[in-house]
Length: 604
Image (tube, rainbow, N blue to C red):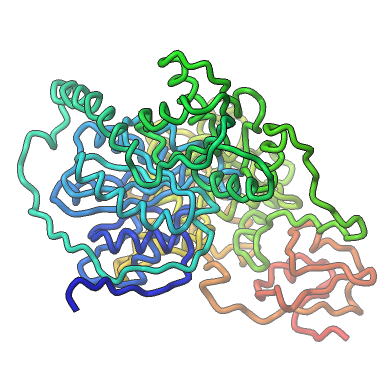
């Protein structure tokens, strides 16, 4: 029937909801690089297999944004996904694209990670909105994230600008049962039209800058009427919140018998000044609850000063709210109780309950990275060596008893850190560990730098044939694409040879003796040498035979546990046992046991 919107009800994760929002808004080109908490957005779009939608995992976030920019110049609606540290990588093209603008709508989804739960930093992407002069949307619920995705495309096309959508971890990974429209907005685009606007020259950039500065106040005024920027409640005590903190605040207020007036900010940049001024004129003081930076608090302080309002603005800067980490319903309730001069009653904790055991992150049982680290450690025993690490599963090699990650900065930095350490301490043997996906992401240029500047370094590529840390996504070395196509595998050894690395060894690290000999040789080579430790992640290959301990041969020396720390190895009655539910049959422990007590002999 005409005029009927067909709906379906689905239980969706926030990332899935935003993916569906993009699909229904008519997205046509989707690019990104996997990074928790954003990964499932792109994966969901790929899994839905919508006709006419192209999806790719790009080699890094910079490339992803540049591919999407080209498609947008040709009139296609595009989506780029990444986490907050990925935006650092993509910031060069995004800053320039802010000046050039877009034709087809472009949403840059940047998932922030307060906590941080799985990131190097707690950086707040709202700040990047100011820096890049781009509009920012900040959803407070899964449902809102779905709706905002579609709104973001409308604003992007209306103002011919990229738009940032900034969900946080609890929005990305929260769930909601939602009614989803089945229709998709059709958008063909008119193709690439040659125009000087696409070429960034200084004079054009100057003119574009002036246009942006005159445009953003118009967007700010537009945002003052935006449906998710709201004022609610009554009273002279004001509260301002945004994102998931708004949901926490609403829940906390439902438990307090207080009168309040609340401003919700859904578009932190350009800031909705007109709506905010209306709110500030109606209250005597304001408490701001937000994650992570005092972004809104500073805007309120500025507006209060600009319009000479005698408003007491409280939040992170005043010391009323903590400056780092996540908020929660309980933490917001405590802050609100003090704000309203109420007694805060802490939740009852049952003292008879045992404490949860400490469970630090460790490499999985059977992970080939454990064997790689152990081989290098054994070969370099007694020698002056530094082990520079990188971002990925293998960062967990820093844990005892391996203790094999001395530096970890950002993607690809292990390779370049090691070169700097060599220049400072030439008598040190410097090892740089990097995974296969990270090698393609940002490792290649660092190796070129080492070859070019004749810097002695041992490169260790931990090739487990997947992007394991973020959920086993394909990369250029796997021979698969996100569209399901079979592609030529790009050889890491061929790349290393092509850029001038002359000494390259490819070894299975589970062959421990060979793995150690390779290290000894590589360390003796002048200039750059490389070892590719190639063994698949345990979750992309079949496990080997489960190992068992012969209790008669086991002396309880615990050397296997002390040296490799595999979680499948456990102490039991003064001896070692292997947890069959965890063992993947890598057989590394059998090569370490001095009494040959581990193998295929059944333990009585």
